Length: 173
Picture 1 (cartoon, rainbow, N blue to C red):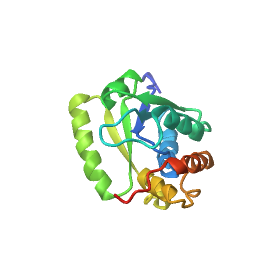
Picture 2 (cartoon, rainbow, N blue to C red; picture 1 turned 135 degrees about the horizontal axis):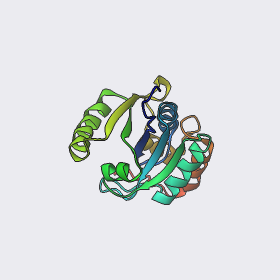
Picture 3 (cartoon, rainbow, N blue to C red; picture 1 turned 90 degrees about the vertical axis):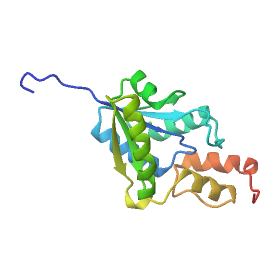
Picture 4 (tube, rainbow, N blue to C red; picture 1 turned 120 degrees about the horizontal axis):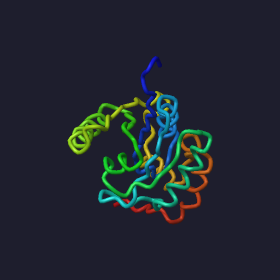
């Protein structure tokens, strides 16, 4: 690089991953091709919703889903995402976008995160068309009613959802 110092760039991909879907994996795999290291950061308890799988289960499901990617690891996220990014040495935060409505929310979050940590850059990766409609909440809903989610999640995740089926809340409100 003719006198320039090589820079190792680590990115975080934060999310609930409840459960991890092929849409998530599409974004993670594409980020892994761009950045030297990617940390899939699985959020702990949420103030917004109670996850179907606890944090340890979601981490285990993610670890199995990304084990084919040498430069990707999974970590627990139990702090502000900007503090977490700093702690793992990340200078990039990767966010996947399925639709313009995702951008509205993610843009607001990026502005907040930029205020908290101006050195961390948010990068958006648009969903591949075949995954643009997949959401974890949709997968959970379909699985709760006994629907087939095999085409939207890795086999081990589909199995975990089937195993959880009897415990899903099927009330109508």
